[in-house]
Length: 301
Ligand code: 0X9
Ligand code: ZN
Image (cartoon, rainbow, N blue to C red; front, side):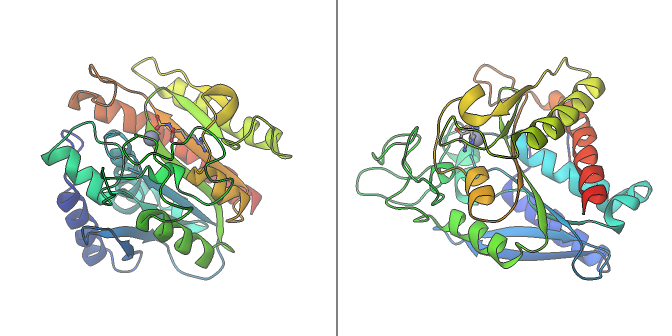
């Protein structure tokens, strides 16, 4: 079963998704969007009451292996949508597509070998791993990314060299008609980021991205019991320049206008290690923001 009292392993997460698919076959389907270097599947859960051409919200977490607070946010969203009957209205007009662990090899490596591993586990000549969030082929390697395979921000040998980035790309392209909002959960720092990350130039629709992001951040802060406070803006302008991110590609090529990277609150000495007692406060407050995103999509499309 799902737990927010501890951090779940990849296997436990996969088992939870499979259990939901069995228990709620009318609204839940689980598929693999691809396989990793170490032959783990990348699971996606679709939550839908049926019908075609409904607007969809795509959520992923765990692109970066060590950012452990991110998968629980995806799992809490899944639990609330599927197992909490009072939330039925949230799935009536909107489909949900959720990938709780986009980087299963790296995530598993942080449990068994190196807690602070960030990248995937694809082998290179000298070092393992590419940064999946530098590997998307939109202004690839134009800034804030490394060409050296031993670095934490190694962008890969070319755009979309990495299986996890390919898997997300192919799924988005196959569903681009329906996907209206993309949310990718990272940690840490309390940033509500939107494109671009490759340039300090603003997208044409920056006011809409800012207004919506601000409303969501406000809702989270109001619900927070831990003093969360988000900084809102484009990745380059409020954090740093970093090309090849999933958010930029999704908007720039994937045809999803509304694209956000949410840097969740941190904790623990390294920041990537919130104590387990912080999981529930973080997922609960973030859920308040996710519901506001849903309301916006339902209204707009
Ligand atoms: O550097 C990243 O990939 C993200 N921060 S993290 O600390 N989680 O590694 C920020 C990504 C923001 N988006 C883009 N730069 N495109
Ligand atoms: Zn990250």
